[in-house]
Amino acid sequence: MLYLFEMNSVSVSYGTGFALRDVSFRVSESDFIGVIGPNGGGKTTLLKVILGLIKPVSGKIIFSNDLASGNSIGYLPQISTGDITYPVTVTDVILSGMMIRKKIISRMSKKDKKRAAEVIDELGLSALAHSSLNELSGGQLQRVFLGRAIIGNPQLLLLDEPGNFVDSNFENDFYEKLRDLNRRMAILMVSHDIGMISSYVKSYACVNMGLHYHPSSEITNEQLLAYGCPVQLITHGEVPHTVLKIHS
Amino acid sequence: MLGAVFASITAGLAGTYIVSRRMVFLSGGITHASFGGIGIGYYAGFNPVIGAAIFGIISALGVEYLSVRHKIREDSAIGILWAFGMAIGIIFIYMTPGYSPNLMSYLFGSILTVTYADIIALGIMSLLLISYFSIFYRTILYISYDEAFARTYSPYVNTFKYITTALIALTIVLNIRMAGVILVLSLLTIPPNIAMIFTRVYSRIIIWSVVAGFAGTAAGYVISYYAGIPVGATIIFTLVLIWLIVKGIFRIVMMRGKRQKP
Image 1: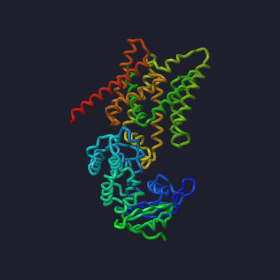
Image 2: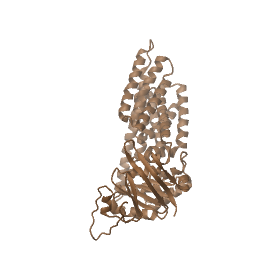
Image 3: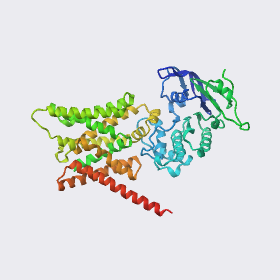
Image 4: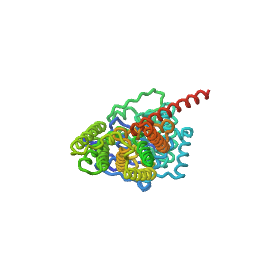
């Protein structure tokens, strides 16, 4: 199994105290990891460190050759930071995902545009390809941003709370889509919706300043409480649930 | 007339950028701050346009810098700059001995007194903006659409923001000669808004802004010549009129379209 990247006792600080402390973990090619933990626990910070937006105060991240050279990381930010009234079309937004390979000069080749059409088709957005963003529903928007993240065929996809603005109709479709994508790329998904993601992710990383990795996708209430944050699971006895090991 | 062409090109390109990035207020600040440079130019005896350009660029970069660093709320910074520039301008023009400059031409613009040098400067500016926007079209588009996302792939986001803002400031200052400090902002903001009534594609907005800007400028010029009223004001009036008419037509077309559907 090949590792995409490896974090070695990485710590991050925003000036006062630590946002992440002594985090070590590895992500491999076919991982689908659910990143869970309390608000302010450092989940988004973890993604930003991987993206290189924040420099760790200590420790380091070692990327595999492919990841380091191709910059091949797709990213879906928490609630879009873009202005949805901005005059830009679905195709343009999805094409902007190609910029990770371009840096400064921004011409899009025929091949890029063909690739954009493929992604649009794959995500079922063909009818909206030339619509502007303010004509889309929340679920459609989310698929556009997913398109932007995957157009470059990344090896690693980072998702920050993708469930936040998906209408429940689309939610299952969306996660199914992710499962599909996971055949081609590793996925690291921040979510607080443990109930929803538990049937899709393969393993968990609990982030609350520190990081605990659970290789299997099993989790229970007690263990979540044991890791020191108030997480509640509302379950019925019949509902299948998963159990993780206690942190050592 | 050539001046009107260049003014429309520069204003269309810069205008589309500021309107879609919601920088209209910032642009107002730049415009009025540059009046300080005009005043100093008069006082010190150099070309007021150069003074205005220096003031405009410094104030634009200053506000952009402050907002990048989150040192001060952007709108407050702009508000202060806006009045400060005007104050400096008025003080220096007042102190300029003997010669009482034609203030009105800077405040309200006068296409008729535009010099050959002004037109050449605008022509160069047009070329500069056209090449900048065509080479870096998508880079500029994506940074201004979603800056936070752009930062995930490019280390040059701030560099591009500063360059673009400086070019916008220069565009505004050069167009002050055409429309004046008070009216130049509408030369930049109305044409893109006309275009955005019927298209949401960025590149088309630019093209239609240039067309609309030229139509408004040319018509305003002709009307003002025959009616004997100030050019700058007539141009703005014409542009707003075009905006209303296009909006009206578009609404009627839309309603027809809806009615035919069922």
